[in-house]
Amino acid sequence: KAKPPSPRGLTTLEQETILGLLNSERFQDHAPRQVYATLLDEGIYVCHWSSMYRMLAEKQQLSERRNQLCHPPAVKPALVARAPNQVWSWDITKLLGPTKHTFYYLYVILDVYSRYASGWLLAERECEELAKQLVRETCAKQNIPLGQLTLHADRGSAMTAQPLALLLSDLGVTKSHSRPRVANDNPYSEAQFKTMKYRPDYPEFFASLPHARAWAQGFFQWYNHEHKHSALHLLTPAVVHYGHAPSVLRARHAVRQQAYAAHPERFVKGPPALENVPPEVWINRPQPVLAVADLH
Image (cartoon, rainbow, N blue to C red; front, side, top):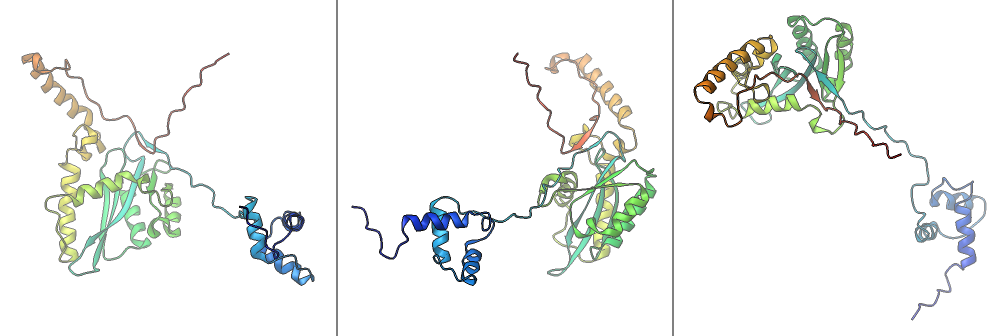
């Protein structure tokens, strides 16, 4: 049985009149509360603002009626390195100190193409001046010419500071940043920190800054010169960074060819192929555009 209309309710004609008022050119961008107050100030009462909301909801017109400011979508960084010293990635990670809430800050610059840790710095604080020092010294050590290098980082305060941006401009280095709240826009630095913190000798905490610095020196010596990197055909970052990869890979290939000549049956995929380092390394490789077949 249908519920009888309330004697206090608005008639159909009244509701249509109020909806027309709310959707009029004068009030179409105003919230019902604002319309209600404006009409009261003009000596007009049509209904309570809550009734206006209810009528709009019943007509599926209840949405933001004002123009809203919105941030433009962040541009997805797409960077490619085809040789060392074309794209660097850098980040800062915390190392636990001897007491609760005590940390040391490890700044690391990583070459995206070779995975070589080109520069690092350990300090008791995170600040833009130390970041500038590391970038300046590493660019000098690697003899970076103007216009060759892009430096990629997340959006931490030290990374986005204006003094660092000015230094990069002076050095002819292009700056690049991850998108806000996107964790995988800086994958190589994150992977390097994971490799470091999963080392068997990584301490539960560091007793002092000298202790942390000594451990880091040993780690980066191992990482750059001994660590056989899975993405580099098990070459060390230093071998790739300093151009020795072709000769090392040719020597390995000669060994495998000798093994194949002695026991070809053991090579189920056939003769070993000469390996090469990847021709390019991407941060966010663009997806290929699929060609649309001409149906005419």
